[in-house]
Image (cartoon, rainbow, N blue to C red; front, side, top):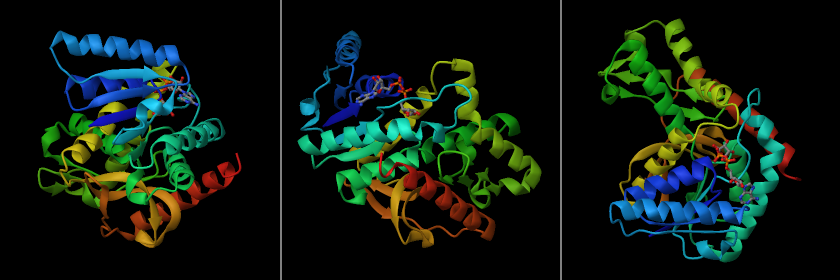
Length: 307
Ligand code: APR
């Protein structure tokens, strides 16, 4: 098993460290900055050596190192700076994603691609279109991260055990995220049986703005431990063929009444990628929010198709 990671920056190198530290797969890091990729690979191999782990990393600015990768994670691009929304990254990162996916396709047409670069749902759409791969093999990480952020906030605010909290966030990775209030379950109860709706809304807002708070503190970049760990969770389900249901951004062809757009929805993941897209029942309010998310992402897509 070999995992290619495009972008050896904060998210990419943290993910590489987690994969190697768990001895899950070999890693190939590709970055426009060859020295960064090479230096990180050397350091990662020394780290594996500390515990005698045998999986290895290589670093390069050449895509040849990912020609035999089973899975490729794309983190190349700019992160947010204070005051920027994920959508502000749109034009800068769209050009990078088109270039990266074109280069991946030249050397490897069999791998599963997981997108991480923001704005996530638009870059996932670009990756799907430019690669021409089956949609089962091109999807994006956002819902796992957003759902984890919400669970952490619910656990802290309501003094509940994280293990007893189940939540799922769909829609976009951004202001138009769609938290399924009807499916936030804490110790077998719906959250609305524990606190009232305005209180739930306040916690959801906190989850939505968590990434922005981290950007404001870090000043020079955006979150990476939780994003990298969220991608790792998806990789673990895929590599170990666990067939678990996770929220991921995927190209829709009529599911939820939407098409020609990438949005976060629950899917069953297996070693082949997306096994099935799950259509859960939504309340009218949740459905309306998903429709608004669709409009937002479609306007983003329209801006980048000719970049
Ligand atoms: N080809 C390959 N690598 C590139 C290219 C390119 N065309 N352009 C930029 N990169 C590399 C940079 O050299 C850098 O090492 O992408 C890396 C990005 O790393 P960071 O700047 O540390 O950003 P990071 O925090 O990892 O975030 C990357 O993931 O979560 C999202 O919003 C985040 O879009 C951002 C992405």
